[in-house]
Image (cartoon, rainbow, N blue to C red):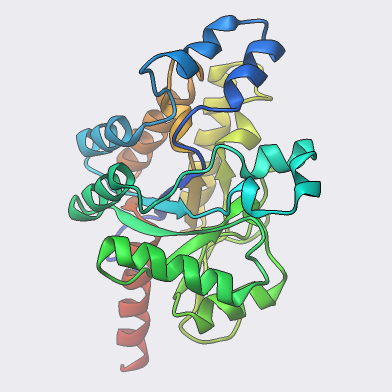
Length: 296
């Protein structure tokens, strides 16, 4: 890996799934669950606790790193059958969606792209085995960007086996980052990307999603020790380590400790000699090294 990454000890790929950018139906849910009416402020004020584009970009800019942002284009609840309107699960999945073609979202997406961040596809919940839906979502996002999308990740890490990757490859994606878990973290013996079709299409296994670690951690320091352990394991195995931090967790008032843990993870990885960046950039680097090696 050191040779393939130009002398770096290992790779840390930073990713963000842009699931929700506005706090809507979640406000009364958390107000009731936590017996805290302050959550309702987002419904009656200009506060936008889940709009974290500028804050997260500023943090990563300060740290000298870039990341992948996977943009969702979910169908609204009202586009579904009336029967689904009554299902609580449907409200969780489809209510509170955003439209990536809205002017404010277009501006945020283009700002990411101009600043060197990767903008990728966050395939909608039901798209894992729907090639035409994926093609549509990719086309819409590329229309916003004005350039091609290289890769992405499925919403909720949904995969229909290898068929999802066949769809991804068929619509022109070069990598996927959906292989992993939202409840467990670790390498599970996979320290590198893999190629399900033995060609240029690559899968980045997800090593750590913040929700798999932080909510169950007895303390912030315990969570940090787990992050440090994973970094050491990545270093020892010359690994490609991929982490996912949802942007809304950068809201320190509602989600204390998530931002601090993310920042500490990056600083420690830099101190350990890691290459740090978006999956798309890591993909290009690995491909260049692979092609150079094949020509020797």
